[in-house]
Amino acid sequence: MQGNRSAVLGTRQVHVWLADLHARGGIPLYSSILLRTMLRDLPQSSFTVIVKNDPRDADSDGRHDRLTIKRLAPWPARLRTAAFAARVAYEELRSRPALVFCG
Image (cartoon, rainbow, N blue to C red):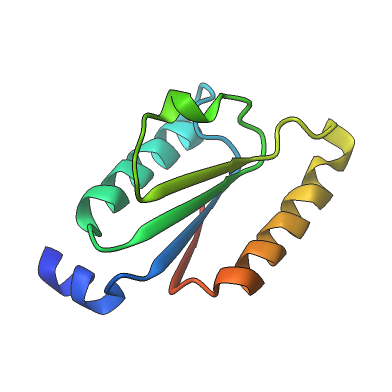
């Protein structure tokens, strides 16, 4: 099955939109498991992850040559949703990913 998934996406860009990646709770845990699984099962794809609320340093995710994480936590809370929407729109128009997952 893994060969089929890789063949479908080839070396395409995958975007993942998340509210949190490292916070406590079920949704951030699910998000981190999902991301690890996608990295493992789609070895030919590169990933851009846009995270709305996670303030962690990019280095805390470990180095991965196929993974770029863009965080919006430095934005003031009242502007963060608008900043997230604008960043998602910009990234989608710029790179035209083959797959978008909203978690």
